[in-house]
Image (cartoon, rainbow, N blue to C red; front, side, top):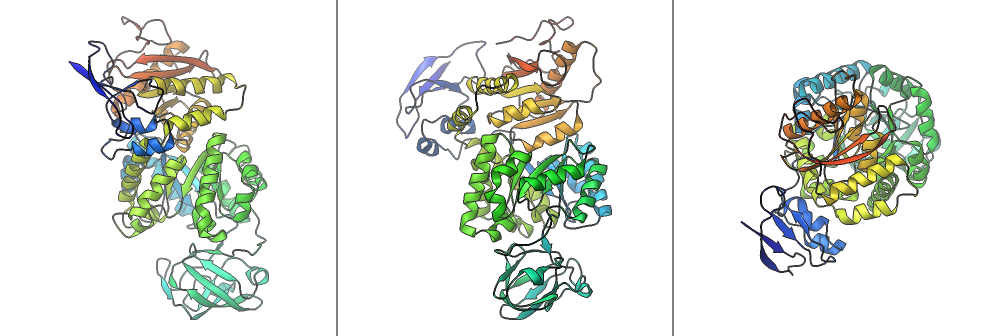
Length: 581
């Protein structure tokens, strides 16, 4: 049998026949490509899968030119999908289907619902996770210093039409708290009449409805509807250009956070963070019992953007919350803020989430618009670790289809990343000297790129080694095996990490225990169609038990399924040690 040697790049290249490498050669070494725009160094591929020519192009323009719509993406999605839980999807049956379709993190929006409602939702998510056999993280999204309308007189799920040119009164009179209609809109910010001026705008529901203030009294604002629309219950209000005196963490937020600690949530999405002090306050409220909960800062206003570096340093990651942000800053500036924030998070190696209106039309339609599909893909190409669904799953008619669409778009976009440039830039920006764990992580990712590894397998206690490897954006999944359930769930925040919660009891011999964990990862890799016999796999371990000792890299060929692994220990019983490359 012969192989084809070809050169890609703008249609320029040569083709010739060479003998095959014969028995024992890699099952993926079917075609030899030497792109014309490189220095001539060839690389072996399985053909044209996962946009490999594009990922290894010499320039960004050549990378774009080599994208191929017929190139199949990876079978595994690397980025995370966050789904907001609401009436449309909170049943165990629907949650189980959404987990199977790709949901990794369940978001509970504490701007809506009672504590009892959220308790039930958490219990349902956990029941669905058990049925699915997969770790699913739970995120508490705080109300934060936001302003919201009351509940409609016609019911919490009703809507009223605000007509352009009509007058409407914004009030803080509690008799309208659950009696909002087309003439009177209650809001939960008592000082609203004190801080805004006549002539200013009030935006409702992510700016879909805009009002202009005509006059104000002690507890009301008379307004004219500038842009009308359908008003629902408990919609967000924005006062762009008006300083508000709301605390970063309200008394209600403190009660919500304490419930989150009690219920064992994994992540807090901190709304309307304007400085590092807001993160510090939340950590104080979480206390010692909630010290391991990850805090993701939601950037939703101009001040948060300007103080981004301070916020990033204090938090575990950032959410680009484009809904409120798109009202607080001009619409044409939102994409700049998104790219800046994602870039700085990638540079710092911290998780970043892109959110709001990603598949908005799927609230009522079974398919997204083409622009929405491109929006999800561009968030992935920008470098987002996770993408989020809000109303699409919480109140939409097609929650399951929304997850499936986001899964498919994300897989395609991940394969289209210009990986050669990305990895080189991340490596160049790494501060020197690096500590042992980071040095090992960087070397492991580079090894996986050079040998076209099917996966990286690592064992982790705190998740640090997996997070460090994820920061260098490998093209293959990182199978992170941990005995800590919360660590496994939280690792969904990081692109490329495929967390595995290992539940078997410890074996006295540490090396044997390590082999068992690696074997479990290989078996799951087979189950999820991530591994094939003979595919190279990078194994990253420590030299002794405990956290902080990761320093060892091995590259093996994936053994036959059900083979007893003997990598750390010298031999398995009656079985030769696994062959290392």
